[in-house]
Image 1 (cartoon, rainbow, N blue to C red):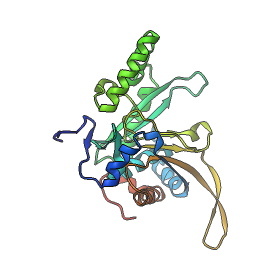
Image 2: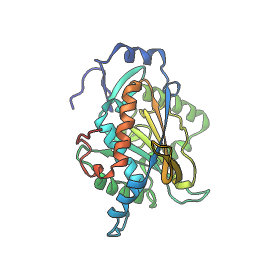
Image 3: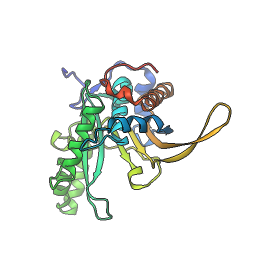
Image 4: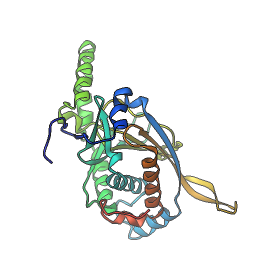
Length: 287
C-alpha cells in the first residue's frame, strides 16, 4: 500500500468522509468519552454441535468457543471496514490490516503472570488458520519466552521515577502522532482492530470494559461465563439453552447506529451458523 500525506505507519488518513465524522473527533477528541456499549446474548446450541463435530478426531489442540469468537470478529471487521477505523490526534484513520489482541494467563493462580498475544489476519484466513495461530500464540505465551510488549514494559519499569514520567509524556506524544516505534507498538495489544477477553474462563460475567485513549483500538469485546439461560419463542414458550453473553464497547465516532446494527446482525449470523467460518474471511455472507 502506497503512503500519502497524512497517513500513519499503521493507518490510512480518511479524507473523504462525511462532515459529521470529520467534525466529531474535533469536538470529542478522547476515545474514552465516546464509548457505546452493546450487549448480546448468544445461543450456543449450533456452536456446541459444530465444535463436537470439529473435534471428533480428538486433535491435540481442540477447537473451542474462543477461537470461534475471534474468527467471527475477524470476519465481521473484514467485511464491515468502518469497524476497523480509529481516531488519533483528532483525525480519522483506517487500519492498514485486520488484527485481534488478547491476554494469555500463563498460570491460573493469583500470582500467575500474563502475556500479550496478537493475530494479524489475512483475507484467506478461516477458522482453521485462526485456530492454528491462536495455538501458536498461546504456546509461546505460556513458555518461558517473553513477548516483545512485556519485555519493553519490564525494561521501562526499572527506570527511576522521574525518568518514567518523562518517558510517559514522550510516549503519549509519539502515540498521538503515530510516531511510536514499531518495536514498541507491534507488541502493544492496544494497537489493534479489536481487543477480546474471555472472562468466562475465570467464571466472570460479561461486562462493560472501557476503551483507552492510548493506541488505535476502537472495539473491545468481552466474553462472559457460559451457562444455561432462558430463551423465548414467538408464542412465549421458554426453553433453557446453553448460552454466553457478549459485551462490546465501541468508539461511536467511527460509524453510526445503523452501521453498528448491521454489524451485530452479521456477528449473530456467523455465530448461529459457525460453518460459515470455514470460508475465507473476505468471502461475503448474506445476512
